[in-house]
Image (tube, rainbow, N blue to C red; front, side, top):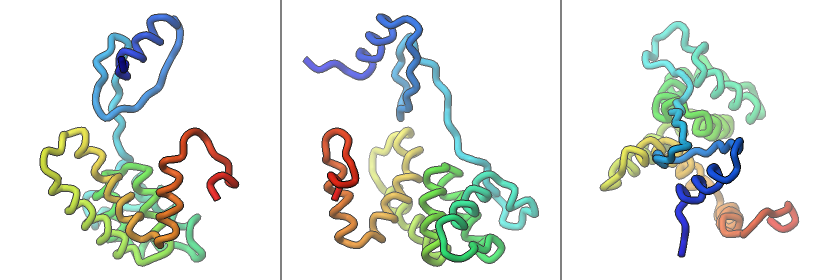
Length: 174
């Protein structure tokens, strides 16, 4: 018989007093041991004319990643509108921002924005999407857009890695 995650965690926590686990889930486990904490994205500007634009956490992270990932300096002023829209589309979620910013270092920022918008449109038409799934839609949109940009051989590598059991070394991945 299979045991569910809730039962497994309850068993661990009941038997090992003092054990602390940090887990992220899409939905509450409703365990007596559970302490919930909602994780929200970084702050981002709603108004494109906000003079404090560059001080928002999401914008600062986007700029830092775009600058470190690119061969030339990323001009925040030149891409202001697209950056504001990207930070809004992904609701300030750091991983999604990092992925989008890395793309913006390689290609026009407006193209990245359009790609994320299209992926969000495609995903928002998914019938029966729960609230938890809707919260993860933003990150999925960025991942989906990044996948589309990969070459066929790059996709093949990721496809092989995603089914590899256990850990792997660089040589195993090759």
